View (cartoon, one colour):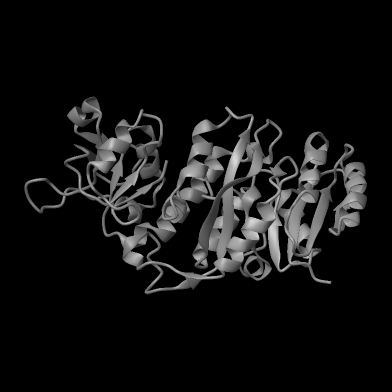
Length: 379
């Protein structure tokens, strides 16, 4: 019999956490039919034995267990393992889980409820947010996430606050930041049909941000993002987590390309907020066509200047410009630096949130701008 929900669990050398993870599957209070699809990616520890032990307990409680895997010398990677676990499963809905995390008992029930209640929804007018390729009211499918509790509690405090405190609108407007998907992959819940439309995951292996790439493709295809505003997952932080294998430069490259593809085409001109290291790095990373769009206007007339950064640092502002020394253009671009109150939106903001004791956020609020239309966060 086809299950309502398949829990998708890739496993690689997860012995320290697997008992607690699988116990949390057993403790789900979902009343529909549920199955667990495990793919063991060449584990060399006792993960296989732990899975077999829990297979008996789970099946005795009515949860069908499908186990796949291989015993090659090397793992094939998280993307491959998740794809295999999905392929061998049968549920109408997919609930993704990492082997080092723990679900709260109500997770599957509440996310299934949210998915059923929001099979599709109509997005607002595209002028009010950043995906310019949408027009009118377009019905989309969702990834449903949830809030999380971090373990250890004091690890990645800013990131955890960001995950849990984004507004429903920011789940879509803050997709360009360094934090990655606005609902984290171990909380994802979606229909099998939508996964098949968007996926599969990239199978490039270690060093590939397969969750970020899938999330971007989901958004390209008109996908929406919903979050259940309860903490339904214990989200572990430890040195062996797969996310540590992905280079920051790899993530940066994908983010810049996605920004240029999805956000910048709808702006004829924009200002980079931050004349420091991150703002200059973004400018240098843009294509020449995008660099030419970084345009500001003088406060006292409507004449266009060449290019501008804005900042609050008086030393940078007094200098007056940034020279792009690596440019092939002659003369080399000299990019004006303006005080943020003298600059004109829209802004691409390269200032990290939650780091200045609220000073940056107060400055931004004082301009009375609309996120997604007048500015986007990139850092």
